Length: 332
Image (tube, rainbow, N blue to C red):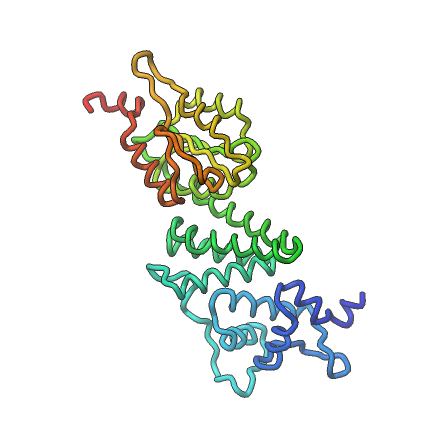
């Protein structure tokens, strides 16, 4: 009841928004983004309307709008009178985050910082917007390699160096990236000439799926059929899936050396299927840092990253025989 009657303290608002109290005080003093009413004329107490103004300010700065311009826009939308230093007539910046055809260094920093700030604030709507705009403007591979992975790594380093704080930030960010990747995969159209699937799975004991989800989305964009089995697939289940599907290639993800089973990888690579006299083996891709530092058998490849994996699998699908396509085109 006290918070509803007298407002919320600056410290509480800062924790909620994921910014420092110093930043809130600076925004108040420099840009007029402060509480409309002050207790005893000195102490800042933030009402729901004041907090909504701060949230608008955060969204704008996250999108790359300079703070002074963001403050003018936020104040105008909230119906507050302009400051004496502000010019009459306020307009929202026309440029949207993520516009343009490339991702130069300055844009990488802007997209990275915007997404990271939204994640720290636990701002789900802004994360969704930024992720959609990022992938639409720059494509999946560039977005993944230059913004999404660096942001995930930065958030991970943050909680590792702060006594396991910010775990919720990493979980929420991962969830929204995963959602975006699945939406991409679900909206893609399959290529009519490719029907034999690719199989994607994490090895037993491996829970990290996000990189495989990025690969699944990239394959779907190119119309290549894939079956994504997700985290910690038991060896027996993986063997059964390979034998049932007869995949063109199998991608095995391992995040750490403790989960990388070369015996399992060799077993998958040695699995054969097809008609007698023309049996084939799947190509096995050892994806993820867990496989690093060990020799790779001739029947296996270790892609350098998402772009490399997509190139390898695209070439593999183009070269592999497709019995369904052959039936449709017997002359070919």
